[in-house]
Image (cartoon, rainbow, N blue to C red; front, side):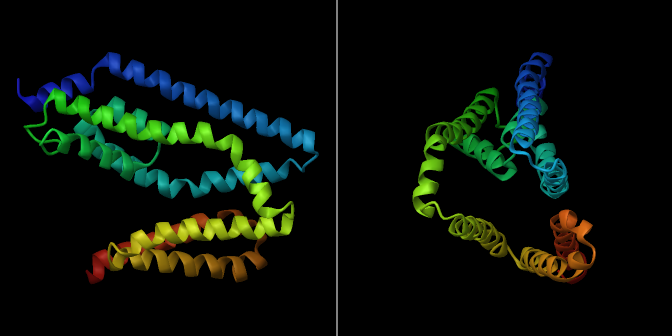
Length: 239
């Protein structure tokens, strides 16, 4: 039996599907509990029930584009590290590029390339360990730092809610600007996607959504689709 066959047999074994499924189910239960808690908080705060429903709908629609990208990477990972582990990692982490990089780093640590004949069971175990170690850092930092973030935010804002809104907006712009800067550097197709998505979002919010307010919750998803269309058009017609 070749190394590839051994890796595929072990990485897709039924027991591994079962073990990985336990974690995914726990994650799903946490999601349900979180939604229930949100519903209770909404009632306790006396908010209009329509507000959280609209927020969930916006989040669901906005997640479609990123989820498709994650799914595509998951298919590629399944061929290298097995279906169960790819399903597990991208179900609880979701950072497709990070997980793929971690798997590659594990393979490179063994002196081989991910998915080749030289990629043995030992290399597979190293890739799995690298992915787990990478995720552990995020979880550790979240658990340690989260309780202090609210105190830090209040100190920075000085209790001024208007300043807090400005601060939150500036943080969001900085985060998305940083992420988009990395994509722009990858080439013209990515640049067109970023610019088309940004311009579309501004036009939708400033013009179309004012006439048709119900489109506001779909605006981010629409802008993402327009950006993808421009990038695809460039790759197919001009590249």
